[in-house]
Length: 154
Image (cartoon, rainbow, N blue to C red):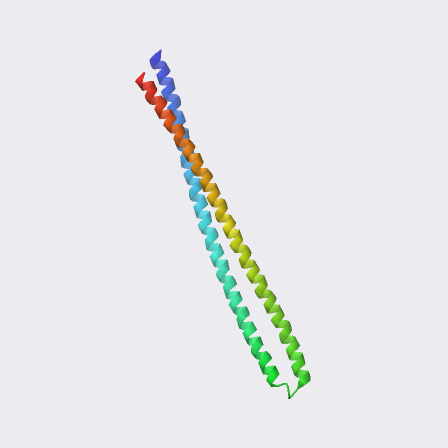
């Protein structure tokens, strides 16, 4: 009867150990997927940031050209005041549009950075939770192994 009881106890412990092993493997797989997702998110962020940097550079070039046009228009002021006034109004409108685009791009970049920070914080929080779950499973396995050793000692 003691051997039968011990065999049942060992079978139960083996099943619990197998379930704990599967949970550990699932948690490790989920952790790996999260890390891959994070890497993809960072790559996408860098790609988007590079695109935004290019757009910002193009806008800076536009602004630079527009400023040059504005300076040219001021140099010609004595020749044609009416012509210059129209040109300046157009350049000012384009400058304002370019400034707004620059502000929008900077705001979008800041939002992306905040989103990235939040994603990293969420990943770390989830990883910490998974680490706690893994630790709990390790404790269960240790207890089951101790019970198995105690049962074998009987």
